[in-house]
Length: 405
Image 1: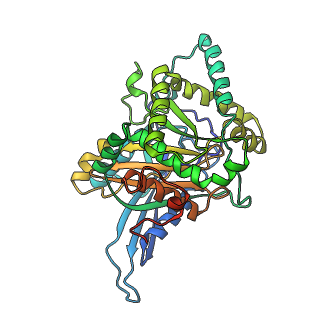
Image 2: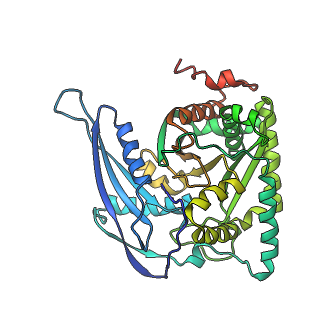
């Protein structure tokens, strides 16, 4: 999880041991899920202490299912939550860190108290080769991004008094094999399928806003892992945020989903072929320096207005990192609730764990409410599972799934 409205700069040094908070929380209810989501929301909105050297904290959450009016309760279920700022790592690096802590807990080497970890250096976390010769190219690509965004709709604030972040864990039985089968049937990758499903849902959600606006497109972006492209040694515990691809599309009328996937696939292949996404890390570094200087009220207007983003997709195969813990029964589920900042009003997190896929959403409460997010995520799940016709419409979007009807 992470909540970072303004990116802070931290002074890391190799081999320096720093304390890491480890908290403990508990909740008891007939349905533990709402209590768990409430505790996660509390953590997403809790800022780190001023001058925090290491923007990470672990929270051990115990949920227990109550037995009605009986004093007896069910067996407790433990959830290990890692709260971090996205400026320090990507989700894959955090998964590795989570794995090491889980192994320490299983061996009894970690208590609920301050932990001490070795902090990697920033050059290792963000390896890049951007000398002065690259700045003109970077500036040109930044201008291109701004120009490409001029037709994208900026999601309006509907609830101006509520600026908190809320999460939701989607109960779904979506097999990994079904997801890959749906992607192959559409002729794209799983990432392309996620882009298309979320873009379709968001176009239905913002249908009236798009019909009244001159801006007819929506933009959704996702991180790109570039560790295999780097020549530097990045085998340390944390990963990097090195790339990002933004998919923009307009659906002035309902489009067959297969055609939408083809359109998205063409965009992602072009972005991968030209390699412009590699400069995203340096681009974000430049933008963060501007955000640190400008007042907050200007940032809240300037960032979303310059590059309007409707949503963020985070797709991680956690089985790669937690296979031993999964087969050994140490880990049953893995959810990632990425807090959204001023640039992104919502996030859709897809986590593959063994044969199943977990889905988590987070949203800014001044743009979406829980009913909106439930409808959007339900539409995405129906698309991923192949439960919708190729030609969907607004009635399909607002109708409940067959299992809930």
